[in-house]
Length: 403
Image 1: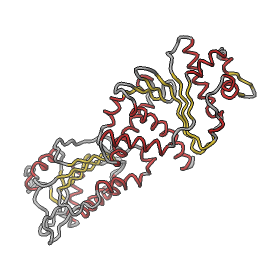
Image 2 (image 1 turned 120 degrees about the horizontal axis):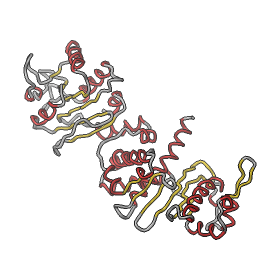
Image 3 (image 1 turned 180 degrees about the vertical axis):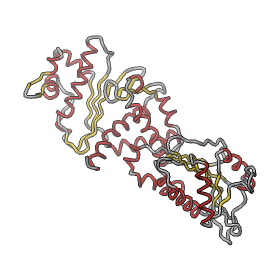
Image 4 (image 1 turned 180 degrees about the horizontal axis):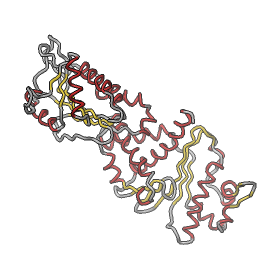
C-alpha cells in the first residue's frame, strides 16, 4: 500500500470516528449513549429512540447505487430480526460523503427502486433477490423504508473536523491548539479503543463518560493523530506552543525525561542534555538573573546515571546534583544554588524523583515542569502555581524536535 492510499484508508476510518465524536458531543442528554460498531458503524441511543448508522467516506469516488447496496442489505437483515421479535426496533441511517454523482439518487426511494438497485444483485453468476431470500414482501419493504434515512451529501472530512474542534473550543473554553492536541487527540484515542473491544456492551459509552475521559490535559502520542498531522508537523506544533521565545524568561525549568531501556544510548541522552542546557540557560556575565535548567531522568539505572555524570564531568560540563560531599544527604539548598557566569553550572541533575518536590518547594521564582513520558505519566504535581506540561513521546529523539 502506498503512503497516499494508506492515508486515504486512515481518513476513511477517522471520518467514522470523527462522526462518532461529533454525535457524542451533540447528544442532548448527558446520559445518552453511543455504541461504536454495534448494529452498524455507530448506534446512537437516547431516551426517545435508537439510530443505527452506516457512515462512509469516499472523497475520491463517484456515487453509485452499488456502493451503498451492501450496507442496505445489512440493515435489512436487522429489520427482519426486528420483524421476528429477535431485536428491538431502530431507525436506520445511511450517511456518506462522495466526490460526485449524488444526483443519481432521487429521494425518497420507492419499494421498486429499493428492490432493483439495492436488493437485486449477481454473485458468482447467480442472480439474488435479497428481499425474497429473507422472506420479506412489499409491505415489509415499505415499513423498512419508513424507518430509513439516506444522506449521501455528508460534509467533507475537513468540515466535520472543524465542527468538532469548534465544539471542543466552546465546551472547554480553550485555544485551538488545546482543542486539537488535548481534547480531540484524547477523543480519537477513546473511540479507537472502543472500536477494538470484542463485546458490544463494552463498545458503548455515554456522553458523560466520554467527556470525563476526554478532559485530560496530557499530550498523547496517538498514532492515528500523528498519521493525520504528520509526525514532523505534530512535533513542530508542540515546539511552537510551548518552547518558542522562552529563552528571555529567567524561570526555573524542570525537564523530566523518561528513558526507554530498549532504545537507550548514552550518546543520545548526552546530546539532549547539551541541547537543553544550551537553549534554556543564560550564564552571561551581563545577565541580571542568570539561570540554568533542572533535569530528572526517569528509568535510568543508578549506575548508568553515575557513569553519565562522570563522563560529563570529564568533558568539563559542570553540573550540580544537590550532594556537597561523599556521604552527604541531598540538599535542596545546594541544588538550588543560582547558576551564573562565575560558577558555570550548566545543568542541575535530580537523581531521584523523590527529590523533585523538595527542590520545587525550595525555589521561590517562577517554576515550570515539562514531563516527557512514553506510556504513562510518572509525576503529578498538585501545586496550581506551577506550570506542568505532560507530553507523551515515542522516543528520546522526539524531545529534541520539541524543545
